[in-house]
Amino acid sequence: MNSYYSCLDTLLIAPQAEQHDLIKRMAYNNNGKIVFYGAEEYFVARSQPFILNKLKRTPNLNGVIFFTIDQFCYGEKFNTELMLNIVKIGLSIHFARENISVLNLKDLKIKYVEFISYYHCKKSEQNFVNEYYFL
Image (cartoon, rainbow, N blue to C red; front, side, top):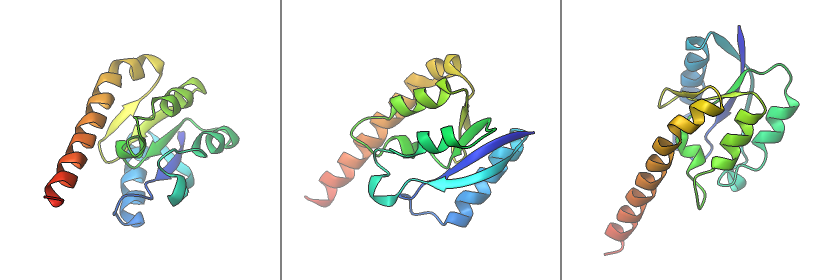
């Protein structure tokens, strides 16, 4: 059975119980269970500075399950570096809301264009909403 670290989204308006349920289901669907829960601090969630060290310190993990890909989109650019570093330490990455998994470096290379496209669409949507409300 696989062991996963759960990482909630502190910036998304979604109940933590809902996030836990979806993440737990993702773990179950990947023949695993959640062995540790965590989240980035609200004030630094855009840069995600602590998650990699938490993952390195948690023994016997097979992967990490984030609630959403949005957690990699809050900063000035898509947080490719974090994703790459997680995969390089041998952990899979999963996104519960989108039901997407990155199992290894090869898988990340295949899905990278989709992630970047998602990020740019997300930023364009935010810019449109901001412009619309300030008219």
